[in-house]
Image 1 (tube, helix red, strand yellow):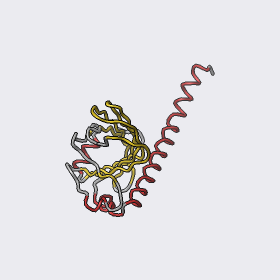
Image 2: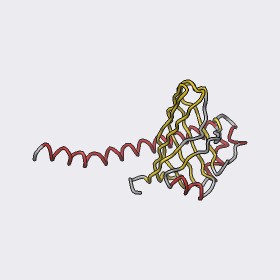
Image 3: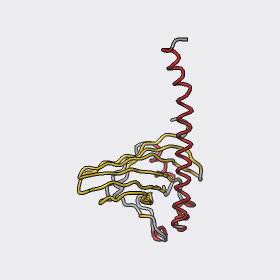
Length: 177
């Protein structure tokens, strides 16, 4: 067999296995993030138990100097089971300086909001705000416009820490649309 036909055939065989491995790693990281959020604040359990679903982003990287951007990949859970993958992107302009990584969980209050997210073109309003996870913070948190958002800083320092303007893509696990 020629190298020119062997190489594309090999890529077609290996690529799905590599993607499955990436999906498995992302799901594992998302589960670890859930455990860390639960450990940090037991009150967050009310959101896990009542939400129609929740998107978990184990690591979002954000940086900026006047113009900034952020992005990361996450997993959508429904009924406690992973059902899809999401990507998040955010661009911003204004006073900002620094860089950081953080984890984020978005809880969807009802089936309608969850359905909008699953359409793959969901965006948080510019004025959306998140609760910085700390012991007891979830006790007074509430849904706003069908979502409740929690973040936990992993590394770095960023002057400006909004979640407004985040945009999300979505596709079911296994690559089916």
